[in-house]
Image (tube, rainbow, N blue to C red):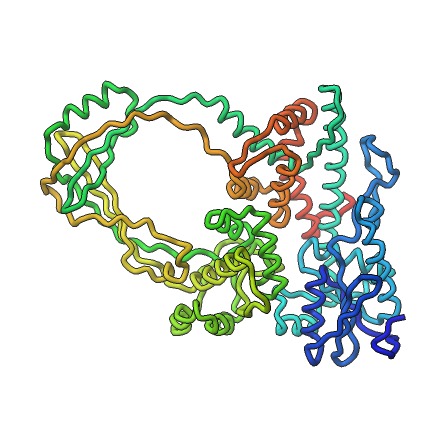
Length: 571
């Protein structure tokens, strides 16, 4: 029986959250005085809040239930009989989960109302559903659903006051299907792969693969083979050193690259001792549009470009910032910012922070705040944006970097298009044409809000006119070799997975991390190890469909059909 001090609690609303940090924040937001009481039972935390009745908020610890082999067949395969069980029965080292489930079950006994407040996505929906179904004794059909995109007090109060009348069963069905399909493919393919490797080498090594892991490793293996088979080819490049005003610029020969040394030397000889004549000057003004708001993929790519954070590291940082109520829900594929989030209110909050004060003042002076948006849509959540809240505790350098990046990106999308100017000059040196290009930012506009994360590659040229005679300081020839294809890095591999439509926004970074953990690949500029190459060879020989994008893409589409109600889990 649950007690609050000496008083026995006989009825209350039980709210299920995904993690302890979220439970604490939700309980504090809903408590009438903002002072929810933290309780601990058998080492498991939960919170009691008062708000026209008692509310008990208890966290899960991520997934408390998982898919497992129903017949416990050991390493044998194929396995097709499975069921959902508490995680401690399926995975080693998860014994504390038993206590966690017992505490939730005890708290559920006297609850007269249940609310699922886990993250509103596939994984969060499964977590809440499984807790309500198994730990709470079958309350999944009676439970209400809180839906929110930030952990701010205002949004949590609104989502509690206006809950959805039921769980999103279409989303849950899609999630259960995804977990079950991934488990079936993963367990059977991994056991088959391990057996095949043993038959080939005579030694036992535990190997793994899956419907997304396989094609991703295949991308890397194909690139690795292209690099290893690459034969450099010589070529030549010619540049003219043109003196314009007080500066010397290098103009590129229009026919670069040159395939033979004889042709290159002939051009050099033809240019010796000759001046250049400005043959054509082309000046063009254009606008550079502001960037789109961040979805998870673009945030991961930008954080890698700027800070060299891996996609997984960025995802973890963003999750911590979300739990601290500093940014909105990060696992989104949306590039839209609906007016309902309150542009002006967020900017006013950001204006309290000294380093953003001037930029905020400029944006709030605009007659209309209209964000630049991308094409991507996510029905569950908007693009990633700052809440405007101040940190309640100090952020580490990585957290500060990502928070600042999200804030400056948010401000930039409300800026006006930047005005740029490009200049292209064609020189004629004794019948040989050379080209010189320049670029200049005339009006920075949105770029100022995104500084220092965007730097325009300005190259300002001295004013020139057609027919002008220009001095040549020299014409030089460089002998070079063609280079192999670039290796994937975590960011470019993530983009390839997105392009091929394999995995999800929430799982792609984890797949890349798994390939590293399995020692199939190594280093930041990804190199496929001998083990990784061997795994792909085995899969190509025994199960080529596993490394095919077509199979994974088809499964992804069918799981999307389940979510949209066009197909059932049983299908």
